Length: 520
Image 1 (spheres, rainbow, N blue to C red):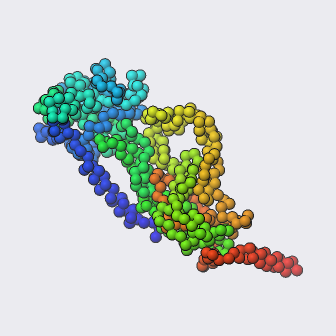
Image 2: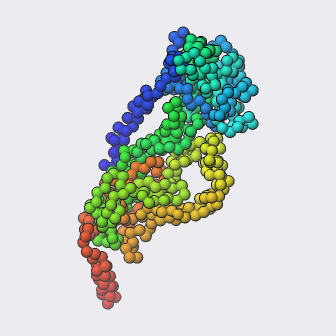
Image 3: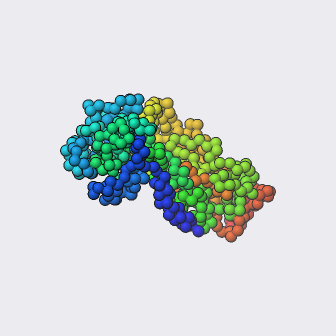
């Protein structure tokens, strides 16, 4: 069979269930007096669940309501929309520079208005480019409802219920991540003043007084390439934030299997199925001829039952999935491999995980996943933005551009040969800054194999592992076809003596005799 569509279909069908289980595991917001919120006030007002449904969101207004993340990184395309007000008050919302070391809340002069008081529902503010604001200090920001008692997304700045059994600040804002719009969050405020006693919450807990939709935001720790833990190409993800911490959202879904060195259908098996033409096998992402003739394997290699030329010591060795055989022992396929430049070792080959990935404007590929360009998203403290690539890098390379010198990478502030220090997998050599198929691999004593095929596959039950990041750059090109004029496998069996040299000599002598006879 060409692929495993039934397993792929089962995997896809399981995804909604996995997502549902994650949603059910989330906790609601609990106030210091023990009240669990948000809740339906049953007072005839528009509730959050009605709002979310009208916008096509699959958000559970109770189970998905969180008090974290309370801080965000503003992106270049920030905009604010005033969605709902079920209050007679007239308040404004603004942002402030967050400071984890600050114990006291920002005062009114440090909160910069986005949507002013009195603005009608439906107001969209598109000019609020926080990153371009001179008052923005370059870090995380929080939001605050102003005009009455100031309520912050950071609950630690809100009034404390000192009379509660466990004194803590009141949670006055509930936050929801959009399921429709990337990098967007709903922030829902209660506007009533709260006090220090358990009975002084003074709000109905439905959080529909002021609801804003903020786009172009990234939570702290979000937007970075990550490993979902799923097999194959489904491993590529981007980090997102929730009340439970950082989660990894899958960004690539499975597809039909192909001979390209990837686990395309995310079933845990790489290049499985009948993926090549007749008399060809899939060898580490390339269709190559089987060893079907007397000269199919080079010195030290033998033809195994699958039609691969392997080390003589590995002919009868069967390894576990994810392992390969070298020198008669089963090992991980990337053991000892050091890939150059942006390549990564996946399934026993060095590949560029971003080679076949196309990202939308403002996003760049990192480890096979499209992430926000660092021009619009901050780098971690130890890294700086490399503007030309859009990726975060070390400070000594932030202003160095090696793109004009192919095959080089920046190390220590200088462009150097990416092959320096590289250790390519068996069957590959480092050329032009990348590990590529070694055209001489499988050549016996300087004599090219008759079929010029790639040989030396590492024997194992599963020649390749699934990889932890999308191997989108694997070489999917076809290798040379093998000779197919014989029906059976003419390769020598393991342990048999070599007769290649004598056979070649006989053929040469026969050819010379024929030529001489014709000349005569």
